[in-house]
Length: 299
View 1 (cartoon, rainbow, N blue to C red):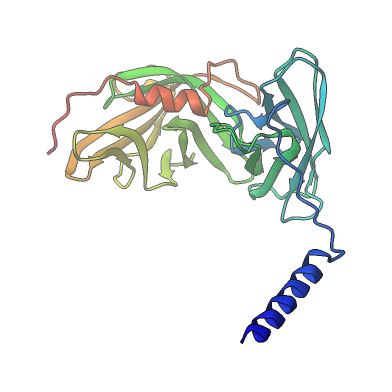
View 2: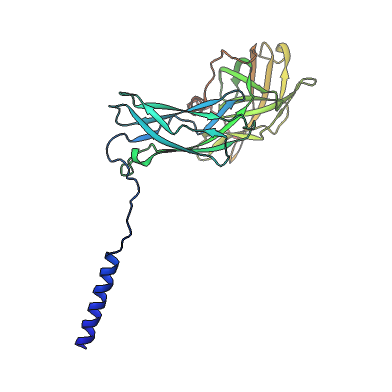
């Protein structure tokens, strides 16, 4: 038995020697940066990019922690559609600047009203995987081109919320559709206008508001009723001027508050550019959340 154990020990030692003496070379991946640039995408970037038909580029903002020196940082763009986007191989930070802009070129092969996915990543050697951070070195985008342009400026009034503000109606010739963009919780609603009957046909059957009503959840506006109409020359009560009239029904899970109108009264028809104070998506979401809550009762 002693001899058997001796031979087993010799054999095991030989195997260990062969394994440890292998000529294979271990090549670790590129380490993330524990110090230095720490580059990420700004949380102010929109994940949904909407561009005009004639737009050729859009911008993405990157940020870094150490802004001491000028730096050139490698980035990479990936899209499942070939030849749609041209993403630069690097982004440059000026000395003393904590932000940099990456301009992405869009191909003229993009189809209107079709969303294209694009993922952009920062080279991991310029990030810090060991530090908890709300910002990330990767951004996933959805990019779309459209032909919506400002059609009319005016005042929007909400009977349910008892508020009014400046706004803009947009129009798409390709779709023959009008839009109140980014109003309710950052999402707009669209409609078509029969100019012979002045009837408005809503595209969406309902929309959310992000406003919670007690334990009944979010308040929703429904467009399934009738009476959506354009009234010319102040022919609707309480409004002077051309008015788009939207009688929404407001509901929560427990029932309905009833129907209250929204109205847009035109102050100026425009042909492309608009001077009205238009809220962007983030501002629209913030505005709706902070509206004074009307004292409504379920019916």
